[in-house]
Length: 198
Image 1 (cartoon, rainbow, N blue to C red):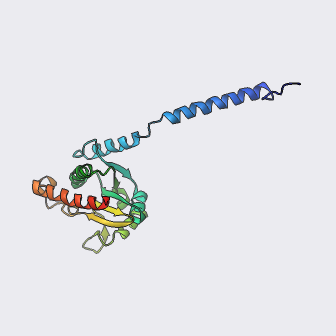
Image 2 (spheres, rainbow, N blue to C red):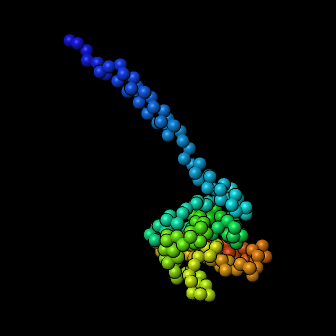
Image 3 (cartoon, rainbow, N blue to C red):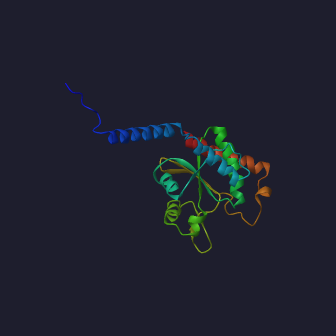
């Protein structure tokens, strides 16, 4: 009885061998990738933008779509601000301290400045969904101001903190944040976070 060859010819054998080796190399590369680096990169990136926040922080960058999805129907904590706003720098530091104290592992960070300036539709939807909470300017326009902390549980807003978002120009954060104000701010944030964790 004649043995049947697995391959019809040598070219087919070489082709299958090369495909097998390429697949094996890809599997090894994918299996060795360190997926935890993304979290570390967000931490470092955030601390580079906000010098009052240490590298070991809980912040993860999200875009407008991610923020809207959380606000609409999920659970999460979102800090909304932008890097050239010094009030966000201070508040982010206090938020990070409290989050680590109570055991919250992740706070989403949404830099909304470009979306607001470009009248991004998703950003406008976020403002509309937060309509009860957002500030209204002298012309009656509703808008987000930095910094704003929003805490959502199962699609319901259980915390909204924007106390310092309208203080610009009247006082600087290093003067505003006395020890008493820092302690009060942290305590308010802590109460919201504990409610979120129930």
